[in-house]
Image (cartoon, rainbow, N blue to C red; front, side, top):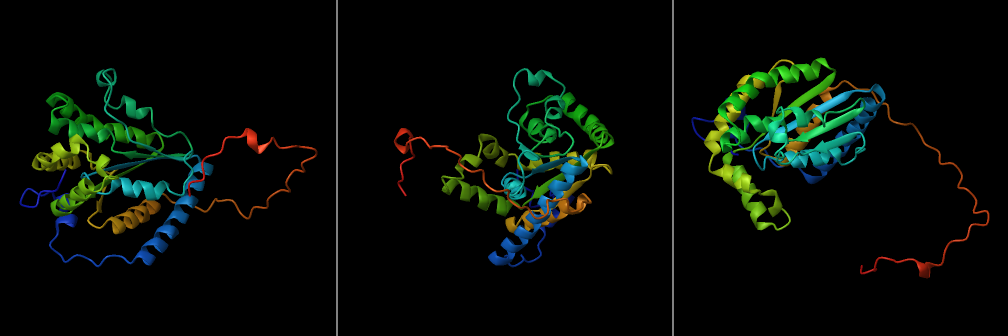
Length: 281
């Protein structure tokens, strides 16, 4: 998906499409020091979520190549995967297609003491599915009617629901797509759906506008991340996430290792009986 560069551009993408001069790139040292500081705070947040039994859901939606995966990676980099997990659901099976739309997402919601990050979510029904013709008009309209109620139910049940939309300009998206094409290690990120979306960017923009109009609710508002600069987007998103959940430092204090158990007659098996990885390096 890409933002409309002309009159059909959404009001929610004005941050990314503004004609204001670009900011200077962040210095590497500053970026890394700020990221480390924020990641320390994420560890504190994780401990608080665990000890207080909170249930947190964070949705990451937005333009293709907007940098959602990069932000998710930096969030989870220092966290315990048993507490903070990422869900990126694939194409629904034939059985799942017959289920209530939200049903398979409910299975991945957090228990007490867990954080779940959705790399795309139930909002596929508001974007990809209607644009690509994967759902009927009635299914699409039903989603727009019921999604706000579904999310209000989640909030009433005690789930902290946070929704991010990553916005980039058409020019920046094109640059990143070209970068992925040239870099073999990134080419897998360009799915056939991503390529098809390039020819339907107006339809995606309109679908996104309608989605915001129906689902930007008080209980679970959309937060737009200016993703034109990846590093700034990462820092800004993580910094904002930390402000949405009041937390205290519940991390462990100083740790003293206990003395190691004495061998007391233990004899290791011969090295010749073990198969080692070849030391090529």
